Amino acid sequence: MTHHGLFITFEGIDGAGKSTHIDALARAFEAQGRVVTLTREPGGTPLAEKLRTLILNDPMDALTEALLVFAARRDHLQQRIEPALARGEVVISDRFTDATFAYQGGGRGYDWETLLNLERMIQTTQGPEGIFVRQPDVTLWFELDPEIAAQRLAGARVPDKFESQNAAFFKRVSDGYAQRLQADPQRFARINADQARDAVWQEVRQVMQHQGWLA
Ligand SMILES: Nc1ncnc2c1ncn2[C@@H]1O[C@H](COP(=O)(O)OP(=O)(O)OP(=O)(O)O)[C@@H](O)[C@H]1O
Ligand SMILES: Cc1cn([C@H]2C[C@H](O)[C@@H](COP(=O)(O)O)O2)c(=O)[nH]c1=O
Image (cartoon, rainbow, N blue to C red; front, side, top):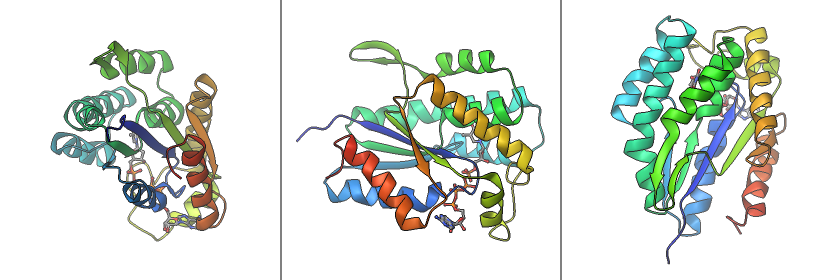
C-alpha cells in the first residue's frame, strides 16, 4: 500500500513536555504500519547537528542565530525531510520554523519580515506538482505557562543558552507562537500542556484521529 508522506511538528517553549510524547506518537504510527522518521531542529543531519552545538552554546547576535538555524534547516530539509516525505514516510520533527519565529522573532525581537523572506527562500521545494514552500501538515503547539515550564526543567539538566533565559523571554516566545498560529490557524493544534502526561497524550492522539491518520 502506498502512503502520502506526512510532516508533523512539535512546538512550544523549553520544558513544555514535547519530547515526552514524540516517541509515543512515532510508536502509534508504526503500530499502523507506517514508517516514521523521527528528527529534531536545530539538527537532524550531521552538518545540522554541528550547527546545533554552536547555536545552543555560543553567544551570537539574533541575525547570526537566525541564519544558522535556517542553514541547518536547509540541510535538514534536503538531506532528510524531503527524501523521507517522498518515500511516503511520517516525518515527526521536534521543532521546525515556527521555533525561529518564536525564539529569534519573539524572544530576541528580530525582524519578522526578514524571517518570512528567509523561510520562503529556505523552504522552497520542487515537487512533482511544481514549486512550493514546504510547511508541516500539522503543528502541535504545547502551550504552558513559562513559570511552570521553568519549574519542570529546574534541576533536570544543565540549562543551555535558551533554557537559561528568564520568564519574560519565554513570554515573548509564546507570543511569537501565538502570532504564527494566527497567521495559519488551519495548520496548528493547540495542546494544553498544563495537564497530567496521559491527558496531554490523549489530546495529541485526538488531533491525529481527527485528521484520519490514527485509528
Ligand atoms: N505533563 C507533565 N507534567 C509534569 N511534568 C512533565 C509533563 N510532561 C513532561 N514533564 C517533565 O517536564 C520536563 C520537560 O519535559 P520535556 O523534556 O518533554 O519538554 P520539552 O518540551 O521537550 O523541552 P525542551 O524543548 O527543552 O527539550 C521533563 O522532566 C519531563 O519529565
Ligand atoms: C529550531 C529552533 C530552536 N531554537 C531553540 C529552542 C530550544 O531552546 C533549542 C533547541 O533545544 P531542544 O531541547 O531541542 O528543544 O533551540 C531556536 O532558537 N530557533 C530555532 O529555529
